Figure 1: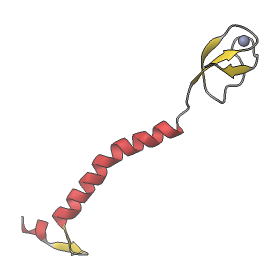
Figure 2 (figure 1 turned 90 degrees about the vertical axis):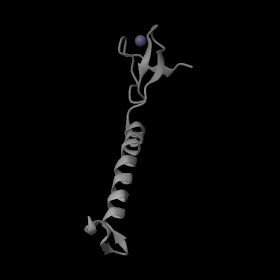
Figure 3 (figure 1 turned 30 degrees about the vertical axis):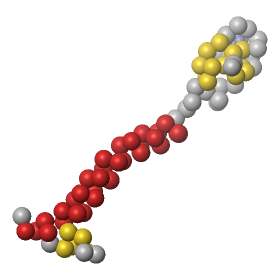
Length: 75
Ligand SMILES: [Zn+2]
């Protein structure tokens, strides 16, 4: 296993580069999940002003699915 301690570049050995890649690969999982969460649509509890409809809706949803009335964010 002598090639593992052979310096490739910048004084880094094959083993050190391998460990570095492994750490990057392990870290990439939670990081990419975090990005997906941020870009994903966030649902908020909203209610209709025209009728009694209450339910989860994204910010893009501006109209009530029941009566097409304006939605307001319910707190
Ligand atoms: Zn409605």
